[in-house]
Image 1: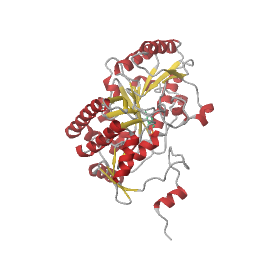
Image 2: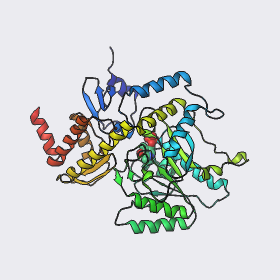
Image 3: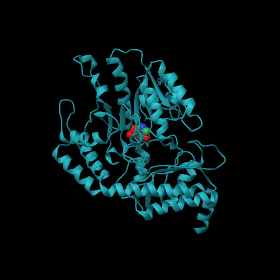
Image 4: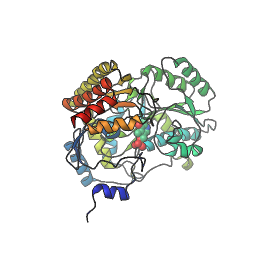
Length: 439
Ligand SMILES: *Cc1c(COP(=O)(O)O)cnc(C)c1O
C-alpha cells in the first residue's frame, strides 16, 4: 500500500524549530504562486510571513526561474578558490554603490548564520593580523539573534533555545535593548565597554530585532552607538539578514544612518529573493587591507563548498535589478503606506498593544493574561486560528507580525488585515466561538 506524504514525513523527516511530539503534523504543500500556497487538498493559504522572511517577489516568479535555468546550463558551479566568474562580480558591482559607507569587499557563504560567523571571524582576525592581541570581546544587544551556529549563537541572547549549548558558547558583553527611556544609560555602557579597547566588534540587527519579537529602535540611536564604538576602534557589524532588501523601506536599514556606517554588513534571506540559499558578508577596504600581507599565516582560512555559487549569484543579481526597478519600488512604497495606515487603525483596538511599524514590517502584541514570551501558549492558538482562516501568520510568542512579499495583491493583504482586525476587536476566544457557529 502506498503511504501518504505525511506518513512518509513522519517516518523520515526532522523539521526545524519543531517540538517533534507536541506539534501537529505539518501541512502538505504542493505548489506556491505569488502570495498563495496550495495544499495537497487544494486549499489555498496566504503567505503573510514571506516564508520565514525570505520571499520578496512572490513565489514562482518566471523571470527568476529563467535566470536560474540559464545559469545552470552556462556554469552551474565551480570551486571559488582559484576561479572567478561573471555572476559574482556582476552582483558585487551592482550592489556596491547602493551600500552604506565604504563597504566594498564581498565574501560569499551559504546562509544568514554563516554570514554572521564570517563577519565575526573576519573582525577577530583583522586585529590578530595587525598584532593587536587585546581585542577579544564582542558587544551584542540584549534579545539579539544572529543565527544557529556556535559563533552566531554566542553573539546572541541566551534563551531557552540556546540552553543545551550555553556552556559551550563564548561570553559577550550585552547592551540593554535601547529605548527612549534608557538611551543615556545604553550610551554610557557602550562607552565603558569600548574604552577598555578590548572589544573587537559590536554586532546588531539594525532598527528591527526580528526573532526576539520584531522589536524596533531608532536609526538615530543606532547611529550614536556606532559612533561611540568606532571612536574607540571597535568594528561595527550590521546583521541585515532580515532587514536587508527594503524590509525597512530602504535597501538596507543602515541606509537610514546619517553620520556613521557599519564596517561589515551581513545579508542573506531576501538576497536571493527567498528562492535559494546564500550568505554575503561585505566589509570595508580597511578591514580587507589587514589581509593584504605576504604572510601565508594571515590568510582568511574560511570557505564553504558552495561559496560563490554562480546560480545563486545570478539569481541575486536579477532579483536586485527587479527590486530597484520602478514597478517594485512603487509596490514597496504602497505596501509600506498600507502597513503604516493599518498600524494606526490597529492601535485603537482593545486586544492589541505596542502596535509598531518600520517600513514594510508591521508588528503588535496580542494582550492576554500570560506575559510576552515565545513560549506563551497563545502563540500556538493564534497560529492555528490564522491557518484555519487560510492565512499563514507565525507569531513570536504573543507578538503578531505581518511581513509579506512586495507583490502581494491588495485583496490578499486586505484579507490579512481583516482577520487581524477581527482579532484585535473581539479577542481570540470570541473569534473562535464565531468560527464554530459558522460551521
Ligand atoms: C534569520 C536570521 C539569521 C540566520 O539566518 P539563517 O539563514 O536562518 O541561518 C541571522 N540573523 C538574523 C537577523 C536573522 O533574522
